Amino acid sequence: MLRIFHTSGLALVFAAGLAAQPVFAETHNEILASIQKEASGTPGFQGFSAARGESFFKTKHGNEWSCSSCHTENPAVSGKHAKTDKVIQPLAPSVNAERFTDPGKVAKWFKRNCNDVLDRVCTPQEKGDVLTYLLTVK
Amino acid sequence: MSIYYRNFPRALVVAILAMSATMSVARADNDSGKYGGENRGKPLQPAQTNAKFQQECSNCHIAYAPGLLPAESWRKVMSGLDKHFGSDASLDVQDNKEITAFLVSNASNRWSASTAPLRISESMWFKRKHDSNEISPAVWKNPQVKSPANCAACHPQAERGDFSERNIKIPK
Image 1: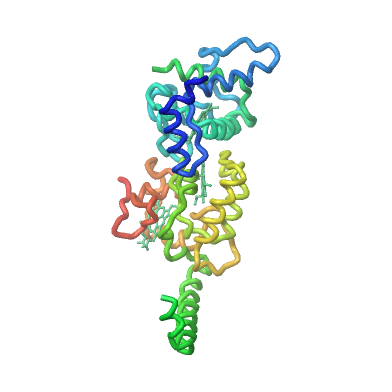
Image 2: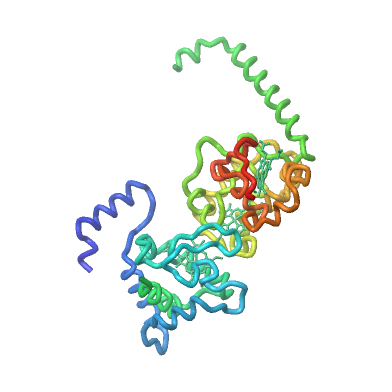
């Protein structure tokens, strides 16, 4: 926990302040930890599973798109927006270090994309499974 | 600076202001009558853009220049982002306010009709500029084009608000 106040962390906080943007950079592990905290409050929670996350990611849930429709079956490569063809940078943190470092951005896109794919928000369990899966992609 | 201003003959200032006002009204009238009142603005892109707009409106497609649509269209687009052309593009209240203000204050200044289409490609100026005299129907079927909303397929500088004819490249 104390490591957050390491000098480089402080420098980051300062840089964010200078850019006048309320961006609080975190590591993907911190983001996973906060999803875990949310999930552990739900009854029957037994941890996250990469295998469950992978199948969630690649399956359609009643709508036209799955997560992989835009992010591809391989989250280590660039994807393409299913409707507009606009290129989307890889989702796996191992190849795209910016992924899962901005809690506001993560929350915004989970909300939007889950709505498109499932017509509802994702549960903390689903979000944690997906991130656990993405962290195994090399 | 202020001294010069104060000494400047007042009548002359008034005369110049009046002249430039009538001139710009006359100009706007000419161009806003075009395309049944559905004309794009000039300029399309303000000199000073908005960082939030650039960041939030360029994830799924290019950030369309504000002068392509009238203010009322932008208000409609921005108030329906949770159901945005089949996608959820919702923003928090603060970001939505800032981007709406930017779009509305730089919207088309040559749009005199009371219409407010949601799509750029539904406006009269767009239809005329992209009718079958200009672009053969086969071009629209090219998978590299896909949709009229895909401006950058034919206007590689679209992101900068540059649609000039010398920069057009129709995909083959």
